[in-house]
Image 1 (tube, one colour):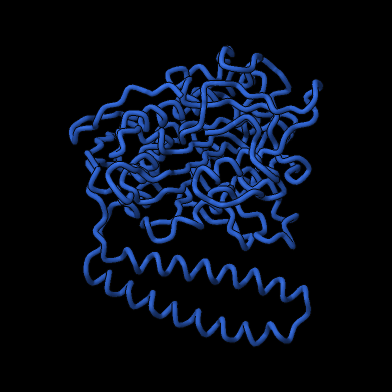
Image 2 (cartoon, rainbow, N blue to C red; image 1 turned 90 degrees about the vertical axis):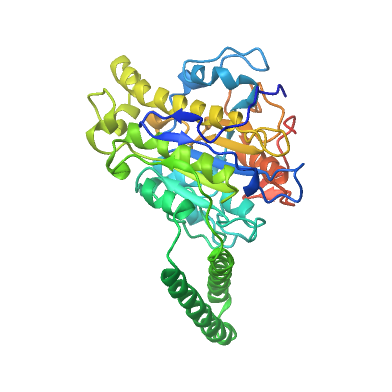
Length: 431
């Protein structure tokens, strides 16, 4: 893989986002918690668009290294050798359901179809987070630009959707704002009480488990999985409660949560960059949902959802392209940020981060969940190509996207050969 030009970021070096936020990235080698200065942890971020992208403007016509960048991919030209474009990957019948299928983007399985599966419809990020332990303040972060029930992309092993944080200021406070001593003492007491309650609940549930039928025992097993997840989060919170949060030279714009979509989205990417750079977490999702009020601040005359059902009408596609091209520009800016940060190991933050960008919607105009638009950047993989995984010449039989996720999980350090309904890694795509 071609190495990007890198430099250390000084405390006064500034990156400016579309929203006017200043990203002053300090030198943060002191926050690295790898075993020695020569190694750096692997991170994973998964970014999901609820309405996907217009297929004919996204997918290249050629495969291999010499493919031509399409209109959608041109904003990523500066990182061409750091990402791979995939065709012919989706989740098959397990994730068909139009907008309702989008929640299976990172799991490959609709929630309603996950009954009886060992880990329900656990999502890629949560599977990766299982091995993080207490090495970071947060085992994972779930972020979103809005509260869209169709774009809940992070799911636990007990089949529960994890609610995302949507307010940029709240995200910043979680990462960097310090609580006063009295508040920390109160939180210690609350965490201890919650742990005691969980012990009592488990005792009662264990007694009940011996007196119910098979289906109810399965429900209780899921309940116990949920309890174990809560216990882990409590232990995580207790472990880090008295550990000082990192200091960063980053300030959000005033009233950041009230900004239009076009001004808020860069803030989420800035905060993701800082979360990875400070090792506050190693796993994150960002769900970019509907654009909200004021047409999101875009120069368009129709609603986003209406535009996605364009029916190939040129005027609709032209306005829809304004939104989709914005997403690609912001993703490209995110990759540039990660490339510019040198880790203690000498590699860039992008080299040590797997960044998945895509959607559980293949074609919003036809409500199709087939042939998902997927890009994977960084993470040490061999990039710079468009890879086509259709299994026939009619582009009707795709390969399971879960195979890509297994490849990512193995690179992250998870010992797994299956995920969802997929078995084995993605052939021809390796580190």
